[in-house]
Image 1 (cartoon, rainbow, N blue to C red):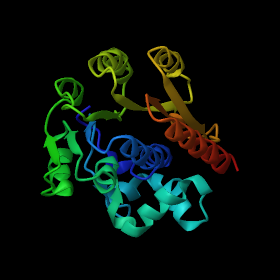
Image 2 (image 1 turned 45 degrees about the horizontal axis):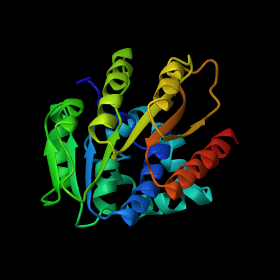
Image 3 (image 1 turned 30 degrees about the horizontal axis):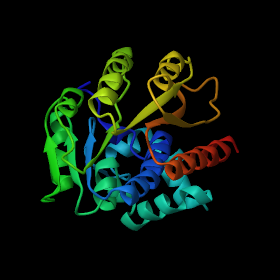
Image 4 (image 1 turned 60 degrees about the horizontal axis):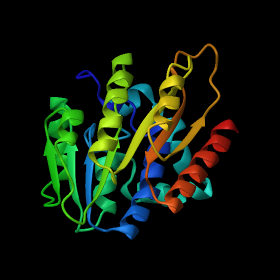
Length: 260
């Protein structure tokens, strides 16, 4: 959806789980093969000001990264929280900035973003990094046109807005194509957990498509609160064993943190 801007949600609980897991998973992938083609289908603007007007409007970071920064975070989240702390509240790293900092010189990165304003900000955020390309195009179609070079490990991260049911339909069609397009590729999907459970059947379908790990956490929701979400999850295909275990540890720690 061209109306979606992630700045209103930056640093929220969904960001916490997906960014902490991404921060843990990527180094394990690099250990196995430092030559990567890393692709994002829905990149956003890359960096966010948690004290800016967008982030402050909804205050979603208050229960997310800001709560972790203000307290002693669970042990599995410490490396990622420290990474965010070093940058400060005004330079919160979205996934493009996160992977840009984590991946070695031997990696190539391609970031797709369709929203014109977000794309323009993403170009500024990435800067003159020769490892990176920023494309103003549909990420689903664009990603499937790409293929790793000889010796490269393919990694694709998919983080749509899920503003409408069409987002689930689109991802349901795209995921089997991607897994077939990259037979040895790693595909990582973010999945919101809705209060009405609309994602349940889709989530079960995703687990039938191949070897994957599902790492998710839920939080208590006030019945009177106007919010669609009650949790967040990552579905990751073909990630290393150590990365699977760390992902589950992060999700379990957050489940306890938010539950308390």
